[in-house]
Every structure is written in structure tokens, then in C-alpha cells.
Amino acid sequence: MAEAALAHSTPLLAGAVSTGGLGRLAAEITIACNGTPDRMAERVVAALQYAAADPVLLTADQCLTCPDRYARHVLYGDPQGRFTILALVWSGGQFSPVHAHNTWCAYAVHHGTLTETLFRFDTATAQAIPLRTETRHAGYGCFARSGLEQIHRLGNAGRRPAISIHVYGVDAGAVCSHVNRVLDARN
Image (cartoon, rainbow, N blue to C red; front, side):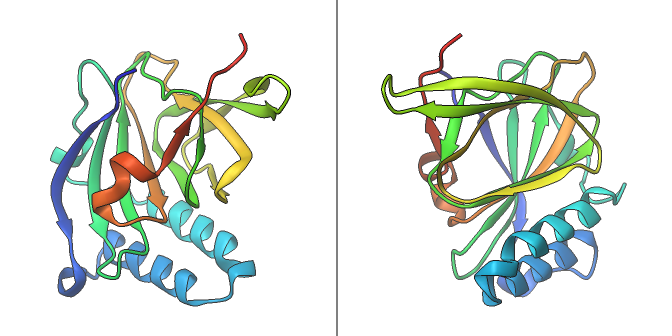
């Protein structure tokens, strides 16, 4: 199963946080990480939804697709390694594998429409069982804790590119190896 392309689009680092939309997003997520755990999800989703509504949040390079899989562009790596912000760019027909998460994560749709299928984990068969499929329009946002409580498959069922902004509770160097827990799924 092919992993998504990971592009480093000149991510912002500690002293380089701008005052623009990405700088504000990084600052808000830092505050959420420093705050109480019970408010973290709410704060992260609100920050993502606000940033996703910004039409100039991303540079042209950060909107580039990859022809054979969705592209991941690193936007910001927290200097303390607590989180990484990425733009995922989906060409038509590109989907993630069915997966749970090894860390907390959140996303908001920035541009276009995504399709998300939600699953439950069946311990008897050790498979993900589909529950329902939802259409996620620009502005939609959600948060998930690590574990098997939130299993999904996300992607672009349309023809035009779509973009989502994601935050994962890992250092930028661990995005490819420590975020997704790919699962077998029943059809």
C-alpha cells in the first residue's frame, strides 16, 4: 500500500512563526497543547476551522498534487515536537487507507469536498467494519484521540483537487511512521 508523498514546503520553525494565518494556527495549537486536556480538542478544531477558511493560508507550492497518491506538505513543526501541521492535497480518486491513529490528530477541509467513511473495530475478527460514509465540505473540522475509537478512510471522490489541513500530535520527523495505524477492513 503506497504511502502519501511527503513534501517539505519550507515549514515554519520556532523563531519563524509568521503573524499570518499559519502563524496564528501554530500559536493556537501551542496554547491548546499547553492547556487542559479536556479543552484541547475544542481549541484545536476551532483553530483549524478558522485557518481553513483563510483563502491565502497556503502557498502555490503547498497546493500541489501528486499524480499517484495524495500529497502531504509539512507546514509547521513544533520546536518541542508536540505537533506537526500539514496540508494534504487530494487529486480526484485519491484516498487514504482505512486507519486508526497512534496519536491525537485533527483536520479541517480547506478547499473542495472530501468523503469520509467511518468504521468500528470488531475485536472478534480484528477488522474495521464500515458504519457510514459522510461528505465533508470546506469548513468541516474534527478531532480524534489515539486508539481504535476513531477509524476512518478519507479521500476525494470528486474530480477536482481538494485540500485539508491536518495536525498530528507527533514531531515532524515521525509523521510518516507514527501517525496512522492501517487496519484490515471488511468490505
